[in-house]
Image (cartoon, rainbow, N blue to C red; front, side):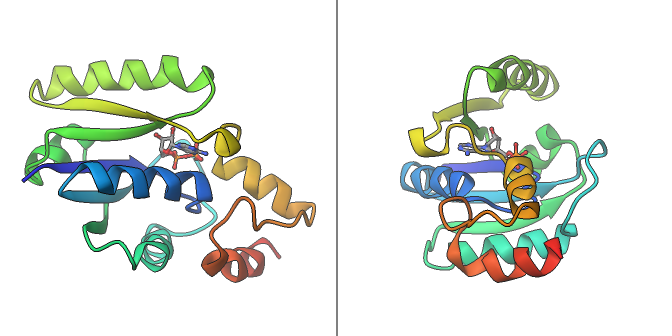
Length: 158
Ligand code: ADP
């Protein structure tokens, strides 16, 4: 059974993330979406809230599981019996950082590979932080966020 991990902050999960989740779920037998702690970012939603939002938008995908962790990703993957990390690659700016992380993860766990899925063109320039910024200005968000979580997002942005 091929198990892959899709890690991120998902603060909150966007349509770009969901696109990667759907595509990766078709490739692997089981996909674990894992909300990781990022000490450098002050989140809008707690880790538990982010897990709940992802569960809500992935309910219809049977082989997707949602979890959270504050472990080192390479160790988390080993514990879950996974040897593949899935990442979404947007514009070139993601590459440098992702490449470095993939190398570090392989150094810590040599069994671990990182696979990149290129972002769908309409999500290429979208990040959770852009969505939050647009939200502050009252921009209509249905192109950016899954419908089911827009009310939660709007409530929080107030
Ligand atoms: P963000 O940069 O939006 O805060 P995360 O840290 O939660 O995103 O990212 C988790 C993963 O999802 C990363 O691999 C990131 O490159 C990818 N990702 C984020 N936004 C998109 C998008 N719009 N399309 C494809 N992949 C994305």
